[in-house]
Image 1 (spheres, one colour):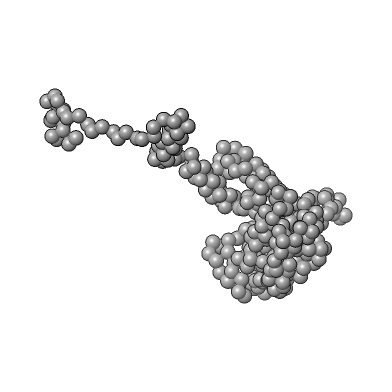
Image 2 (cartoon, rainbow, N blue to C red):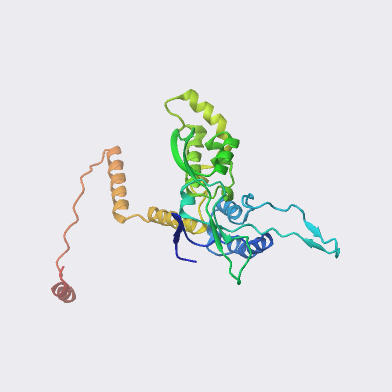
Length: 298
């Protein structure tokens, strides 16, 4: 389903089917060449590709199902051993999930577990219970009203603060554009030994920096965190365009710099800095020059 539709106020768009674990690994084996070959994804920075592969193909924390940790199951009647297959529950991405922190939960679409009458299956759409709570960020020194689930509140309590939850949760489990944006803002505050943290309170600044300094990331990598491949390609194209515009300079700027350099040299050497105007073009003398001058002007 490519078109977006709404259910109970939730705008649902773009099916992102979660493949079974063996199939998901096979998909990565087929897709990994576009990250390492000569394609457009291969032009992306190496640090982004490492995070993106983990984000797109990495194992997510089990939220809607209980995984069977056994590798094989034996049928005691036949004695046949079969490998266990983990088929994750498909979670439909929504716009509202990107605007909040749902803790890995999402909209589920399936069928009710009931007796089938006349080959009729009743569709079931399950939406997590949401609540809007106010959270405080120590790094950003700001309060946020965020739509969360009970699982998110439990995860934040386990992490002790909102900042710890945002910074240490893997990207595939955070899975929220709002959460990615918060992480980038927090990491920008921690660069350069936290010089942008709490500028009005040096004591509080040192305490908060010591508490979160283990999450520091190089400055050039921060803006790439949480971007989808298409968004990363757009960012790469913008940076290439900016570099090209900076490398190509108008001639008038080069002439201006050369003129300033020449005037400075004359001033240092006590030479006259008067600029002699260019002499006018001499009058044509030959018949050819007179014809050209008559037809196209001087």
